[in-house]
Image (cartoon, rainbow over all chains, first blue to last red; front, side):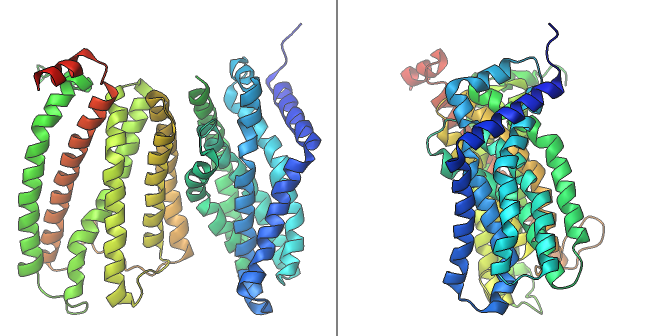
Length: 227
Length: 246
């Protein structure tokens, strides 16, 4: 029997993780509801003035997306670490960084993508117009995978540590800042009729850079955490 | 020169007494240079025609800001060396540098706020350099807290090294993204490519203070690394003998 190829392995990992996530729907829903609630809190805190809301909308949605992504990171490796799957992945002949990439893709499909889908609804609550909503979707589509990739490094580093959640926030949130700036900036630039191409290009560049670098760092961190 | 065995001092056992001999020298020199630098800063440097006397805080602010960034890079470099070659002393150096770097970052932020109030009329503005300096403080804290959260020191060294390297790569990205986002801070007054836009006494005061800050940092790091070595190597024979002889 020939051993399965690299792509097959990655597909298997993605399919497995997505299937597990779909069987634990409550977990997926929790971070999504968290996203909606955080965004809904802002008008209550700052007042319902439509002009103010339109100005704050992009930033609020993006910050909430950032927090929701971060909240979901704990699930990325914790269960596999607990039941020994992670060690099997590390022992497998395939490069760990690509298997990690597959896990991150699955994680994004089950946490990042739902955020992208529901974000326009929240944007409507903040009086964003159609153009701004489109750019919001585009910026989230480009930005949230970067968040998952960077977050995976933090999730691997804090694997099995006490106080892991708060520590993860301290480690990861500073690294999320560029994505936040250009993501929210893209929507604001559209709202100001300046065009969002530059912001979106930079978001794309950030995604490509992290795509190359982050899985490697995550794999290294996982090896350190499990050795 | 080849007769000097550089690697000899890469062992904690041989570095410990060396650091003990060097640290007081660096400390005393730092104090002397700082006295001279403060004399220049307060008595020789002219009053700024625009900013009055309040500008004199730059003699503390600028060296602290420089050091905060340099120390992060040096810390990340030591951490990376420790990660790549499993040299224990390198990781200990990184661990010893982090608190000094965090303190420098804090001083830069604090003095910046004191300077900002009379100049900009606000303690804090969301300007590129202020914001990146604040993020730098978070990066230092992340390094230290991650290290503290892991009980096994070798695993802690290696995990903290990863976050230090990721942080070092991110510092320029964060800096430029914040810069494009908003800039109010005055342009850099000192650059290598064009002559400085300030009086030469001011420049000298600042450079001498920077030297003092460097020397202080080296003294502080050497002193701290000695504690780290003692703590890590407490079960080694040479540390026990140290205790018996004392």
